[in-house]
Length: 204
Image (cartoon, rainbow, N blue to C red; front, top):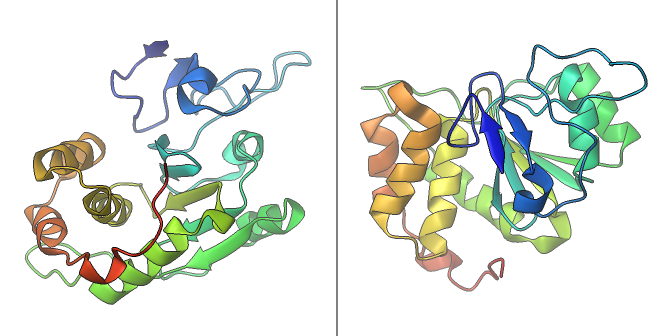
């Protein structure tokens, strides 16, 4: 696999990735390009991943907020659902894309929280996890605005259910949040109680 511009398969504008389909386990698109390459080259269609796009698990993806340039790439994932973590209404263009492609939207709006005033709604995370773990909703894409904090917290709580150690959970979170990593987010993941979710089926 070759990754230009990012050693961790993620980046602010999306990486140029060769060999992505084999790694992620879905049918290969013709080409994956950076956000700057948004035009067709002859008859070849470019596939532009959203900001901070990555695979979480079988049938589960994560990213920042997708826009029109990402729709062809998202179509290649054959998504069944999108799990949206912002409180704002979904944009009309994105809603039309979901309708045209038979994708269901699940919205669990969480306000952007900045330290030291942090209020991550645990019950909202819990309900979002139930949707995320239901294989009837897969393939599913989780996203917030930039794919860092709200998405990172949800994925971190999923990792607790998957019995990841805390150091690995924090490492994954920090890989996406980078310089914007928040101690409060990591504290939330550490203290999140998974006991009521243990009977939910996990991905293989």
